[in-house]
Structures are given as C-alpha cells and as structure tokens.
Amino acid sequence: TAGAILLSANLTSSIVQPAFGYLSDRRPIGWFLPLAPFIACLGLSLTGLASSYFLLILCVILSGFGVASFHPEGFKTAYFFTGDKRATGMAIFAVGGNLGIALGPILVLALVTYLGVKGTAAMVLPGILIGMLLYFHMSMLSNPVELAHKEAKKKTPLSRDQKNSFLLLVAIATIRSWTQFGLLAYIPFYYIDHLKGNPLYAGKLVSTFLMAGALGTLLGAPFADRWGHKKFLATTLLLSFPLLLLFYKSSGFMTFVSLGVAGMVLISSFALTTVMAQAVLPQHLGMASGMMVGFTISAGGIGVTLLGIIADTWGVLTAIKSIFAMPLIAFALCLVLKYPLRQSSPSAR
Image (cartoon, rainbow, N blue to C red; front, side, top):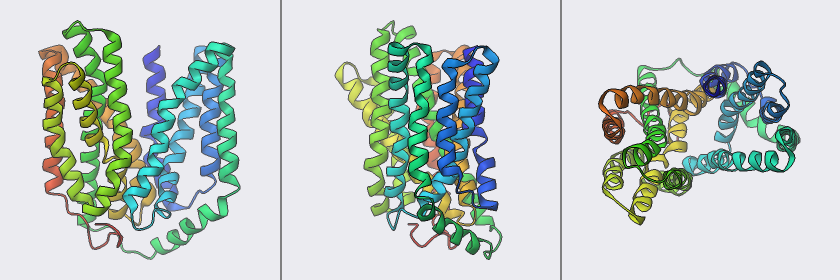
C-alpha cells in the first residue's frame, strides 16, 4: 500500500519532468510557475480528506504533477537570473527545495497532531501564497525566457559533443543520486540490523547527512564558480570515496562528523550539474533541467532496488561497500567529459 503511494509520487513528480521540459522548450509555459506550486500543495492538502485509497492515489498524483511541472520551468527561469556566478545562483534557488523537503514533514506532522488527519487541508495555504507571489511577478520572470526562446530557434542542431557531454552529465548525476539514496536506505540497515544499534542513532545519522548535503549545496557553489565547474565536480566525486571510507571506520562522535563532511562534499554539486547541463544545451534549457532534476533523481532511486538485490545475495556490508565505490565511477566519467563546449554559454567555466 505504502509502496504504491511512493511509486505514484515518484512517477509523477520526477520521471515525467523531462516531458514537461520538452514542452517548455517548444513553447514557454510561464503560467506553470504560479500554477504548479498551487497544484502541488492542493494535491497534498487533499490527502487527509480522501475517503478511499483510490482517491488518495489521485491526490498524490495531482501533487506530483504540480512538482514535475514546476521544476523544468523554474530551473529554466532561474538560469536567466543567476548572473555570471551561475552555480552560486542556482544553488540558492535549489536549496529552497531542500528546505521545503526538510520542513514539509514537520509541518504536516504538526497539522495532523493538532487538527487531526483533515488538518492536511491547511497545506493548500503555502501554495496559494507562493502562487500569488509568482503571479504578480510574471512579466518580470517570463520576459527573459521568451526572448531567449526566440533566439534558441535560430541556433543550429545539437552537435555530437553536446549530446555526448549531456549524456555523461546525466550519468554522473544519476550515479551521485544513486550513492545518496543508497546511503539513506542502507545506513539504517547497517546500524540497526547489522550492528544491532539504536534506531534513533541511525535516524540522527540520516538527518546529519541530509542537512550537511543542503549546506554543501550552498557552500560549494561559490568554489565551483571560482575554480571551474568541471574541476570542482571531479574533485568532489574523488574526495567522496575516502570520506565515505572514513565514515565506515569511524565511531562515536567522529561518525557524525565524517558522514556530515561526506554528505556535504558529495551533494555539493547538485545545483552545479544542472548548470553544466544547461550550459551544454542552451537551446533546450527545459529538457536539461527536467533531466538533471527529475530523471536522475528517479533513476537514482531505482538504483537502490538493485542495491537491494546485492544486499539480499551478498549481505548489507557488500551493498554498503558498493555504494562507496560509486563516486569513483562518476569521477572516471567526469574525466572524459568535454566541458565547457564552444556552444556553451560564455559564463560556463
């Protein structure tokens, strides 16, 4: 039952994002910006009012479509307001989503605790407020996108280097996502089932990893703009391997420190890879955004299922060690990545 709900949310909120990106590239859909947050919050708010399992699934799907329709258009629009320091600007934009993921469950839990299950109805209010805020600033947000769309029509078809670089970026981001979700899934298994540890301790480790990752997204972006995008991406992927090994060998307080630093370094390139994909495909900003933000996250989540096969066959320890090796694979792909390209935006470094 819970699995079907999660699958419905994942399919609609992440996997279909490239489809919305494709639509966005064919024709600017600025009205998605105010409408999408409202739809996402509306679907979520109705979950507590659903009278049947079928209606609950429909509410989840509605919310997922709101999320999926916002991200490609949102990241595409943000591209035109990031200035020369694109990684820094995109990181500030992306960390808002991270903050929402962190605060959302707390808010819903508080509403349900004090108002009952039907208290989820109050979740529509943030969607209304954000939707109105974006609606009254639509002209400012949509004008640069519409001008760029007219220019993009004049550009030549994608070159082989563009296609290859984009596919490599998708693969790198997918492996990073696979590593991230793998750690979130198997850290509790390792500490609870293998070491017979306290579930609360495992939960604190997961929270530490997520919070450090959000912080790393903000702190790492200025360094990426200063050092160069590809250099920063390769460095963080390479450093992730010894940091994860250090976490594995640590105990006590150092376990939290090493995992926090590993999460900060690994996830620090989240916004950066989106910026790099947009620079490689300036003619298809919506598709680039949808693939990097939606598809790679979904593919990473699916990869956790493959880790489950490894864990069932060879044990949780083998699955954990497999996760540690993944950043090295992504690093190897980064070495053959051509970036920046001549077709890329001048601000790509």
